[in-house]
Image 1: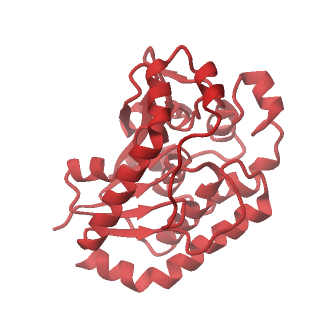
Image 2: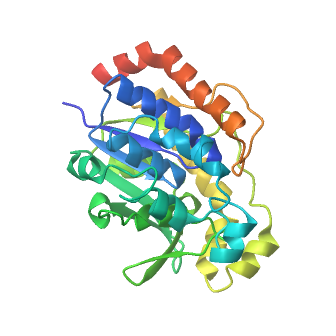
Length: 285
């Protein structure tokens, strides 16, 4: 019997798309043997594995209106443009206004990995679900800590940044862990071509304590292209099923626009419906 994996790309507010596809999976009782998420994609996977349909969407539509979620108030208070402790700590904690159902998440049999980037080496680290605990979601915070916009997150004495810097679409990790096939949810359209990082002078200055992170950021577009090509090669071989936004919407990684994010979420639902039959055939082969 095939081992089927789920790979979810990051992308900030663009991950409203994967939130929709994952909600559709919950609605249609679609589950996987393995799941890996990057940055905001890792948080979406957590909501999916905890069986909380609609929860991930609220982080792109409802909670973004809170001034502590994102912006200069957060940056001045915490040093983080995205207030990771607030998002994945206070809101998501057991006493928060939108808690993760950790009891369900912890018991789910799916192999669950969260990708972060080691601040010292600039290389990817793959945290297992065992590194999480009730009200301790630092692995998701680490995976989402955008260099220059956020401080690194410390876990067991080591510091970590956004996993998208070192392994944006971790299909190879899925293959290396025994997956025969993968379903990949991307946050960009199929024709997206990643260019070198902008604001090079700024992140070089703000990340000067982490020279290997700077190197990783400088080469991020090359790494991304390799991940992208690998996913599409697997698709041609019949080993991957790729969801990617079917049309362009005018929004960015930092789009704090609930209406725009809702439209992207609705596009994800539409793309799922249009691909549902093909997906079922892929999963059953």
